[in-house]
Image 1 (cartoon, rainbow, N blue to C red):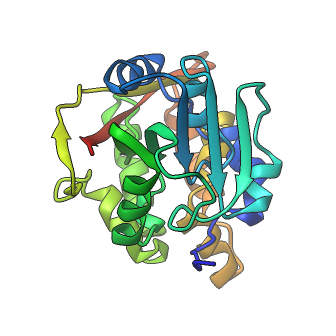
Image 2: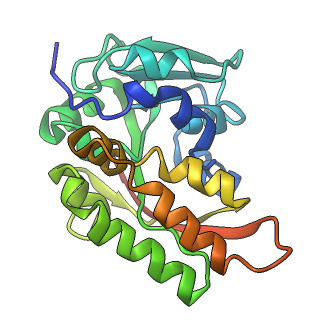
Length: 249
């Protein structure tokens, strides 16, 4: 079995609770470019955020992840089958899926091996779609600067090197199939400070900083955010632009 970098199993419950949900617009577009809506394969599904969105539009979604702990916290859906397996070496039949998706996970894969596996699993004319989201914005300069400093300086040294692909917004990512023009899509949520704190706690760099230093870097940031959070405001709109790439085999 292919080895993988496991940065999330120890906080699988937090990941399931606090990661944002992808917009329906994304899944409607994916369904529109897939040759049919029978089977979609969601690779590196984690706790199933993308799989659940796909399940509203595809008859069957196979959602795989090498982390059994992540899958144990995934929300169940009658159209979704979860299985613990690496994306680079799946048990799916050749030519069995019309769509293969990777949400916020491609940077952990052995990409060339995965591309070959995706090509094997996809039907003729099937689509591979991958996306990621980077640093959030609260559309408030003071709050955004606090988040940027925390991301780049406070926990900056603790980000795994694979994260660079996400931070670059997939700018240099090239899929080895015929490109499919993708729309601009943004992910939004309206969160309280407590929800935002829960999300920040799922960052792999935060978890690594805690493990390496024995100190939690989050409380100081949360207190600084709280001071600048508008008085009487319980929730704020948070936005993550998605870097979306797609190609057809």
